[in-house]
Length: 334
Image (cartoon, rainbow, N blue to C red; front, side):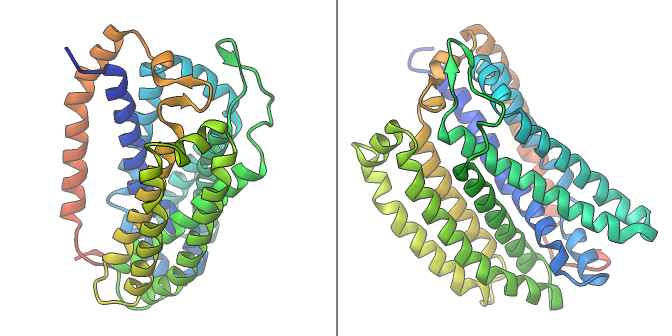
């Protein structure tokens, strides 16, 4: 098909899957991070009920992103996985433990304190691992020939720890925004109380990561401050500042959904900065999406499946959120 780039289409699909995962799983991981701050009993039950109908379907996008990377960009998959085995394994273990804890806290009330701690710990470990993975990818992966050439601990640096903590702050703020939107009473008041310091912390984290990133790799500096990236990077800090101000004001406002939506806006601006830094690489500074791409026939075959399945996933996900669109209390949605 003239003018249609399959490789670019697959890069867009994977980027969309990652963004959808951040949007849809970020808030329930954030609720897990905030869990110790909620009162034992009704508040914790209400927080759990707010995500119960949707949490276990959110990892669909993570599977699509990882599976799409393996199938559409096998060279990148072969380089990135050996470099990031440790944080990725920690992320998967955190997600598994969190899921088990979510189910067993209802079925094993005699050990609910343990399962609550496991839910929080699994959420925090998974989030930190995701952020560290992003930081390790951004800071660069050593490549020799067509394989990973670095060491076991190359992923662990001050920058990757910064991105891990920053993502935990962002997810916690998403979780607080979700609870402001979906709950009432004491739990909503607690969520508002958590949201204000988290808003300030996220602003500092975005500034720190943004100041650090252009100096990790020469190409980042060129893309951020050269043409045409400069036309995007100039207004982004202003948009972040405006978004943070609106978020701060919305936390105490009457429109309960605004803190969550504005936090998503800040995540969107951050992802835009990430896209400017990386594109057109899939292994930053080392391998472009076209160098890592699978054969065209393989991409076309998989694209047929993606064109069918992605709308189906979007459809049933949207339906689930629509059905459970109201407020929640200790008994569930109403």
